[in-house]
Length: 260
Ligand code: NAD
Image (cartoon, rainbow, N blue to C red; front, side):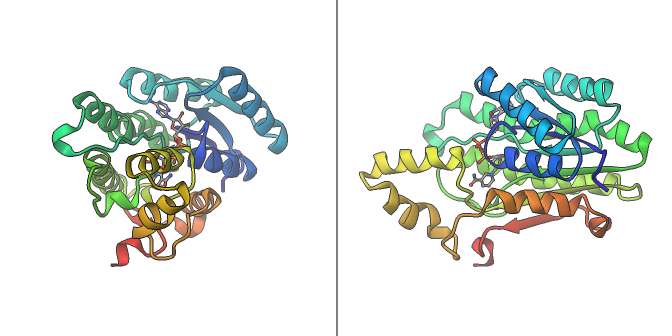
């Protein structure tokens, strides 16, 4: 089902997105990598992925806060590969501050990258999916799409918004062979979370080990980080025939966090 398909994974130069891109390539999909980073390292990554799995891999440097660049990334992929069959909206950033001190520019940036980019990418990719009669859209939301935590107003608002968008798109295309779902991970050990661990350790004058145990994983009942590989496996499942009737869901992958 995935062999020969074309996938865009936004924010795939690091963390969850990179794991998802690897697994899609491993399953035989052509992949478009996207995200920021050192140009030489990204090129190395692109070439290595293509060689390891013998699939075409391209890179788009589109900035997910820029609607025009998102639309162009989708159009460019369709020109180069002939299709966008699988769209994984994964790019995201975090900023932690009290709501009355939250920098306005950060709010706008988080809403743009974590929420609006999903809308622009879906809007651009959907007509081609409809025309070809198949599509899989997977939005990487968060446990913070289901529940809140203090000091993360923009992130929580954006991720709740992603779930609303996911359900709406799912309903609009429900009669077609296109599905749209969201995955809601708890804490996954990636550079995004490493940054939070460092900041919290500094703010509370605690060791990073103590921050992981008492702050970061406090809300995650299984007390383990989610593996990036697990998120990739779930994306593959959502792209498989078994998931053909799964649409509009927000799938928690968070060690029991939202079961409380
Ligand atoms: P990460 O920091 O490791 O990777 C983020 C990726 O997004 C990078 O490739 C980065 O270059 C890219 N990116 C950032 N801003 C961008 C922009 N403007 N345009 C294009 N690319 C951009 O983060 P991660 O932990 O892998 O997070 C990936 C997604 O998973 C995010 O949406 C995040 O909210 C979500 N998530 C992460 C966790 C976690 O614990 N790590 C938990 C739940 C949800």
